[in-house]
Length: 359
Image (tube, rainbow, N blue to C red; front, side, top):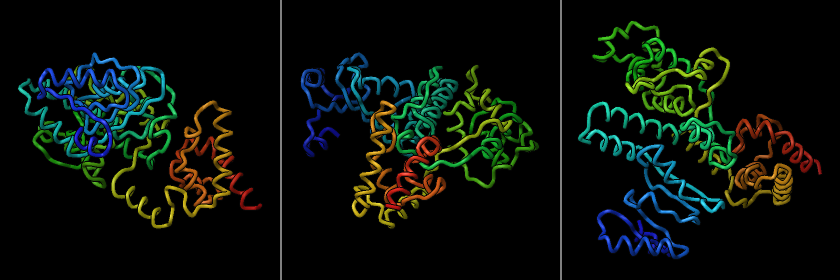
């Protein structure tokens, strides 16, 4: 990775356990003393490194746990300036992590705990909620939406998963809140596994109630329920999922559950939007309307004392100018408009678009 960056004009240094002590120290000293240097490191790069002006942390695959991720991104922005953190992950990374856990020379209970930590991390990756809320919630802290993470700024498509969530919660409750996601999904899909049959769970009302979805869908929903605090890992550490107070409220229909829509549907929407000519750079969009929307965005940002992109990203304004929505339903289809922003900004932007159309 360091060599790749160097070939593309970025000064980068490697750091890993396979290097000599002298080489590691030389690269560490260069990173600490010079500006504009990227350190490409494994976890061998000690947590004690305290460089205050780190502005960018990039994970090319999954970290070991949410705790590790929290510590690693915490190296950025220590000087109080804005900083960015990005992470790439895919199914292959998850398989690799599972393999590492399974091949460890540790007890079965230790492996179960490691798999649960990994599930929590994946839930964080897949959540549709504000990432800061989820991250701090994991450590027992409450926070308002940050307005700064990818989910707040450019929300992935969401769907109401309250009905599916109640199906999951029913299976968790009926099986005694003692089992992990794999067993719960076996119940939902009607799999007569040895474990299901031994406990008589094929007789539960929830048995085979989830056959309309495949296993990956249920797994993603469960992870997002955990990330959202509706389900929590068994506090006694036995691997089961327990329904929280917010989960009980969801069961009663007092709150809703929105989940992050991924996969082919999202890709298809993106391709369709591209085919319709929604250029990311604004080419072909009414420049006058786009300027009007940017001016409105700036005014709203100043009123709220936040950066302009917190209101809407350029990409969202470009899509807005291209679509020219005429009501809230159409406005909700604009890329980057979630429920919160629809409620807060929908009417004012629709008025601006209508006024421009009438001019």
